[in-house]
Length: 181
Ligand SMILES: [Zn+2]
Image (cartoon, rainbow, N blue to C red; front, top):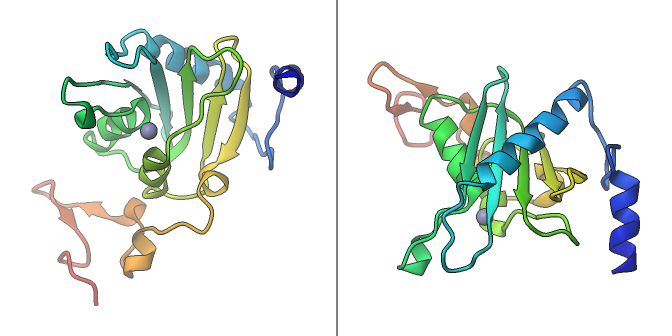
């Protein structure tokens, strides 16, 4: 517990993480975290009562938000991170700079589940994940750091998901088809 508090002080508004690598994005971090906290307010979580919000920053500066949405059929519930990403992808975005995640946990930084890490990894390993607390402090890690030695689209010998084009009919087109060479 004590260690957690020390970390909280260390990262308050500063770079931190196993490999801290904030860049020009720094000024936008507070705003991105604020948007994830705003999104958390819409969480539909009557079963877990565990609110989560996410704010995803696309490469052109557009931000997509998401919250967790649970269901009486429990396994149908979806995480905030995947909701935000699905919103972005369904509007034609596939290149992301960062995602901020917020919860109500005060004594630890919210961390994305394994499923969400894999979902993020589909769209590259070199982008930033800000795991925050309600007070706005955060830990920064890359997707690569959160999911090392990962399996992704490249392993299927197709182009990375970021390179997949959307054709006129808005269907995925990979080298003219969905098959590998
Ligand atoms: Zn998740």
